[in-house]
Image 1 (spheres, rainbow, N blue to C red):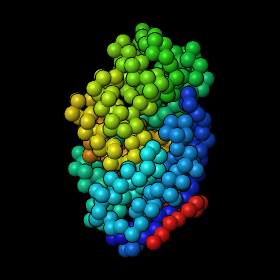
Image 2 (cartoon, one colour):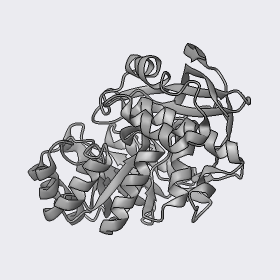
Image 3 (cartoon, helix red, strand yellow):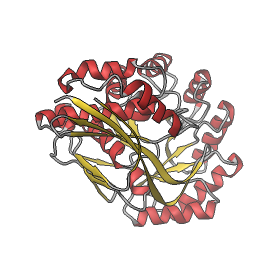
Length: 367
């Protein structure tokens, strides 16, 4: 099974409501879909959401990485060179983790299809279903309370609440949400690097003093500020999840050694795909630190790949794979099924995806 063509296209998936964080606002998921086509007719699918404010990867950067670095190192090569191929993708260039992630997951897809096995089975799956939280975008307190009620009415019992835009309102936002939903609903918050270390500790203490019962706080300070992150972890009553601070296994190891966070968020787009994510999960398990599997604003191709990984890693205990649940439509055929708050795996080989509708072709290299 040799790779004869690398194709990349754009897909635009409208959202049910605007996605708002301390870093950006989006009305649609604008993603790059990668297709690796083989001489046997099999196709491996991957996806990269350009998220310049987090990864630095714009759509133009992803396409340039594919055209000039990643596609040339794949063409004409046999999928059975899998370990070498995945290694060469990571070595083909520095940074550009989203483009690498799209190609890496497409390689895993092809490898599973080559042997007729789902990727999560190849990885030794411990489970076949995941339950995700859903994101509540940052808005005025009363609007966030309404959005939280709608999410609970859809069956979600864990909400990831975005905070950090005008931090003086954050406690009011969370108080409004806590008053609007049943006490059994889990609230976790994501500041997207918006607070200073001391501000974070002050805010988190105040939240717990008010009985808001926050499960965890995601990336309260700047991603590069590991000392600040450690300060929050040491002084916060709320467990701290490192997100933007972790782009690679090396980043994860540094945080684990410093004890700078209580948990690690694994995102395929930050670590170059399933291959890098497995290394982070292994390190976390060695240090006895639990992980979350997260996503950017991704469609079901990439979320499905992350779900395959998470099903096989017992160290991943928290799930934030709500991208498809935030979308107004789903152009993807095959892969895991979204059933309310649950992602249910299928026994289709590889990653299980076999088509994506509404693609706008952007480029192709072939043998």
